[in-house]
Image 1 (cartoon, rainbow, N blue to C red):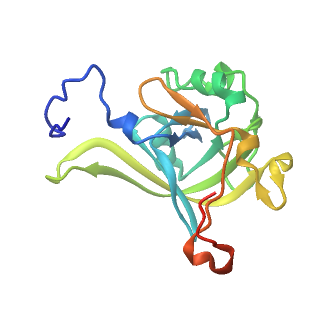
Image 2 (image 1 turned 120 degrees about the horizontal axis):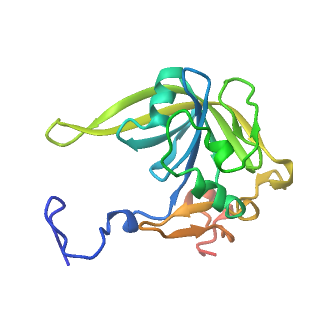
Length: 208
């Protein structure tokens, strides 16, 4: 099938989110200007660059996480995992801004070193971020979309030592969750290695 993106697709569900999948989940924690913690998952999330390390999440409308990140200039990202799927899902609930999602999800908060916002204590890995950009996304006609892109520079990284194996972060052992569109999720429980042609003698032409 083919359809123009600005026209009806004729399907029961929008395929856009399901095609661009799996997407890592940005479990974003912030403080509002009154110091009240906020925690919410964002599936429009990813790394931007590693030199310096930066990551991004986007918010349809200026929701609490995006607003707090802009107002306070900081946020934390915690890795959402299969073991924490219920807590992650609970934190996605729409609640008044003055409610603490950590309490609603029965999650313990852990302190960060460089920022005031907390992180999820049970997460295998968390990153402290300083907000470097919060901009409204414009469409191809230069019109505002009421969606906001937040970019943060990572200034601190917390890793649970049990997930460091042979000098690597053991992604499969951490068992991260990923979003696959609709209400579908995937879990990373196995990884495999593919050497690149630029790896020189380590590359033998075989994809393992």
